Image (cartoon, rainbow, N blue to C red; front, side, top):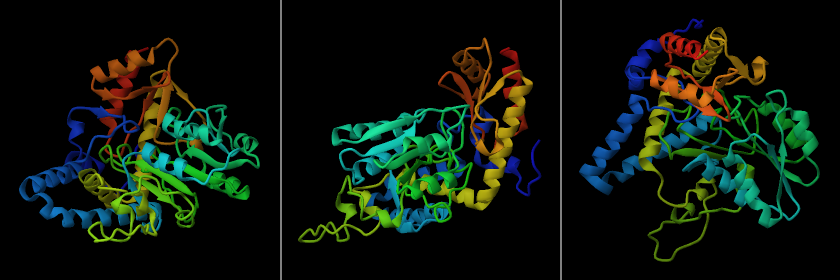
Length: 383
């Protein structure tokens, strides 16, 4: 059942989400459709480029800096701790390659992590850094298993806020405590958590974070964010340095290599201007709706998905603890091929994903009961 809310989500659905006219779109953990306001930002940028070219660049540049402030507010970070990146993978790579490793150091991470939060760490083998993989038990990652994998050689724990294939939500407060007690840095892949959940880096002082905006934040692909806690900025080696990384002007007669004292030093060159403008438009919607209202609404929709799936005879995969849940719902049914099921759902107008042998369903704020009824009826027909 839907919770009582002062927000009219049906109006938002009609005004901002044209995708709802064609699809029961329940695949926001993959790539989200754009709200109309984000599409308008892209269209405005394209028209301005056609009409004015570089003349309009300062206006767009100022808007990008406003968006940096919006991202900082999203995380309760300082704007100097925010860099824009092309993807979550890009941000992870900057941290992995810039961290002050020594031969013999180790990284601990979960065995079920998305490859982008595995391979950059594994790629450090040539520098004498090894990776320890902690398996999932009972549909979740147990902090005590992570602790067992950490020893005096461990320099960093890399973990997702929400695991992409199970929907399990790691407790970042617990992970911060266990890491910092052991002088281990904490990196968070936040792409599946930002939006459905709040991350306050002042209350929960993680060290690094990266996320693209094209999933729950309703932005386009190629426009993401990286957070580097202020006391780490000078301790990491800057990677991808370019004209935008330094304090002085690229137009100075004598170039001076003096890095910016902020996370912008990792923004070496020109940014994905249209992508960031569109992401900023989507983030403005989140703040208009209220970040907590978005969290509550996605949780409500995810719980409704669980109810529909169970009523149709499917099983919920993952931890049964409410505090472990996220916006991702993973389901399975004996005798039903999830790939075939995903294709049939798509044929019937329901967009979901198949991940590691199970159906993954990820609703957002604008999904209504009609979407969920269609999902339930198709799941029932697949028995």
